[in-house]
Length: 141
Image (cartoon, rainbow, N blue to C red):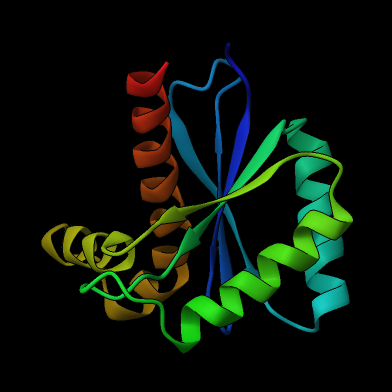
């Protein structure tokens, strides 16, 4: 059942955003939201959901390498609960253990400057979360 999915890599300062194509096959980075305050951030996400007609949202959950959840995961959980209360579409979490590190490794190997990396890494991490999530959906159907 194809559908458009929005992915968020929710950091303390920025939120990376990626979206799937309408068939839920590919993922591309869309933007990075610089966090201001919860209300403004939620409105921005709501606009993006509407613009892309997303049917669900997946938020990367920063789980520790040993499988435990730390302070970052608690903050993301609070963010997800708030999001669920604001959006009229399903909101899921997805293990994002290596997405930011993978993004950084890729950008370094592509010889992207540190300044440029900072501006695209969150968007790319959201894209990796979404690609991994879509792949898992494909195999669970």
